[in-house]
Length: 205
Image 1 (spheres, rainbow, N blue to C red):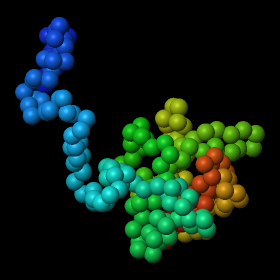
Image 2 (tube, rainbow, N blue to C red):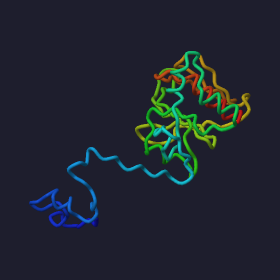
Image 3 (tube, one colour):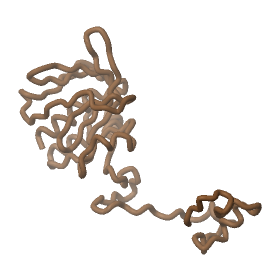
Image 4 (cartoon, rainbow, N blue to C red):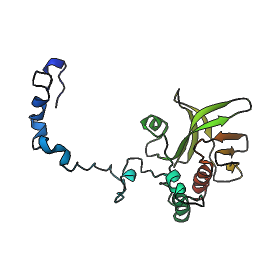
């Protein structure tokens, strides 16, 4: 339906309101009286995104799964998604998404996808600051100021654990260690071990 610049001339704007909209040719075939009882249409997948039967969470353009949910179901704390990916070499379903939305897309290159993302506190000597920590399949590891939406740090990636490693000191606290500096993070959702597994899983791909 085309949008008229004059609001008074748009479909549904007159005294008959929604009744006019319902008889518009665009809605031909819609049974308005029994609308709630009808089967909703299926959303089309984007090209190249595999279908996962019975799992609508994975049918998104980001092709993401939830490490957090998976590890919660396993008493030993291991992540099925992470461990299986290490063996198969596929690490496209590692993500733990607690606050992913379109605003983080601006930090991705074309074809790049998020594997892990969390709002964490970056701990400094006398203060702490909330940042969005993002791991992608590039691989890329960055932290973003969530209010200003600017990259505050780009942690240089290395497959060599001597140049990039993760030390977990508690379920919520972990350190990312590089030759030049050590960065401490606190994850209120206690995903420290998941961050370690996600990063090491990429290094061992």
